[in-house]
Amino acid sequence: MMPTVKFKLPLAKSSKLTRQIPLREQLPQLPAVPNLPKRVTATAKRWLPSLPFKNKHPQLDILIIGAGASGVDMACHLQQDQIMAKSLKKGRIAIVDKRAAIGGTWDLFQYPGVRSDSDMTTFGFAHRPWLGNKTLADGKAIKTYIQETAKEAGIESLIQFKTKVAQIEWSSQLKYWTATLVDVESGKSRQITTRFIVGATGYYDFEQGYQPTFVGQKTFGGQIIHPQQWTPEVDYANKRVVVIGSGATAVTLVPALIAEGAGNHSKAQTAAHVTLLQRTPTYISTVPSKDDSVTTLTTRYKFNQQTAYDLVRWRNILFQQGVYHFAQIAPKLLKKGLVTKAKKQLEGSGVDLKHFVPAYNPWDERLCAVPDGDLFKAMHTGRADIVTDTIQRFTPTGIELTSGRHLDADIIVTATGLKLQMLGGAQVIVDGEKKEVGERMTYKAVMVEGAPNIAVLFGYTNASWTLKIDLACDYITRLLRHMYQNGYKTVEPSPVATDGETALKQADTVMGSLTAGYIRRAANVLPKQGDRYPWVVTNNYLSDIVMLKYRRIEDKWLRFST
Image 1: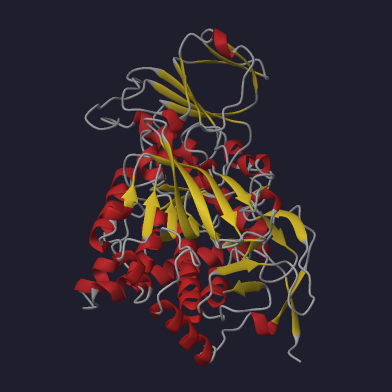
Image 2: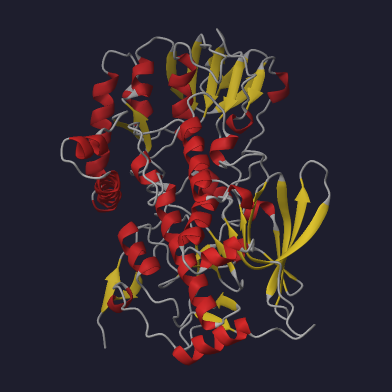
């Protein structure tokens, strides 16, 4: 018997669970010995002709929903796999996206200053180095990077744009999905069948953000806009702007709106004054705007680009993971460090430090990174300030606060968060019964309990999103290759293991390590965690590498069928 180790997971502070993960399940496994009879049988079946009407095959092997970073990464993994690339060459893999271009989030958001909120060395794809020296890259550069990755991999032709997936329906009799696709322009619908579906739509509604209704909102005489609906036509030149919010979008907008010659595309403009209105403070961490480490390693030390990229990437991964786990072990000490740095950067600005001292511990909510302290620098200009208060009502000329103070505004930006949504809003039906993803557990944070042949991609919330996406894509590729080699048509995670062990659903969601408002509001939308491995989300890149890359595909929780 292997010993059982008590492993305290970095969960939301509301969770009281201490979960047991056996040591044997935390270690890599040797590859399973191939089941040669099963593989020979599977190969023979592929070569033998099917009898008419006996074996109806779906039109596709794999349907990927979403052509953003996650969808492109998934397609690249399939293209790079010797076996799965055959499906791609035969035209049996397709990607659909509601938008008209590759990029997902980075094609959608157009507000001033939009950028990544994690370093690009870890945000970039593992197989294609990010060679820019900006630590936090702007949205346009990220979109270009994703587009170039798709072009280089030759997967652009797979994408059907302006196509919404309205419904996916599984048939256990036929052993494949039927997806109802809708043309977003004409409204016409059609159906396509596929053996496997990968949801790469992210976790929020692209159509609308979270927009609370404020008292007196209709009386405001200026413009109210959510960052998700920002367009290049928004005119904020020489206007007073109030940004409501305290997350990454809000702290990005404030310095961008007052920057000289800012604006989108060819429209350069600068706001007269910007006020950041927050209900509660957020931890702000300053990071260097540029990182020339890859260039240094390639020029001075003669490393090739991929090796240099890998070294810098691993340095940043270990630093991210170290800071996150330090926050779990010594939150007061990390809080002191962040607050001390904020105090130093605010000296001489006249801004009270209280606006940068949250009541919660670091990483209870996502920590915001600002390049070269641009938010703090904005506070020194006299054209930006920060207010911590609650809203009493909107007035014709601005916002009246609970404290009685009035904020004059020409434009109010409601950076109040996202509206969460799964699978781009597609309805899921299994054998005629509607299934809610939010009522199911997540298996390895990749698959969903009781849902055959479907994977839903989730990135990290405590590190770069694509770090986890890359691992998940690797796992899905391994899973599909395993099914192909062994002649399996279906796979389904079951909460009841073959030895009788049962995983129990918990309140924590797949993103349960954070307590941000938009995540709490969507507790019924996101899949849940279980009370044991591999139904637990650890938010630990090192343990996820083992689980998703070096553990055997077949285990006691997965049910395969031919």
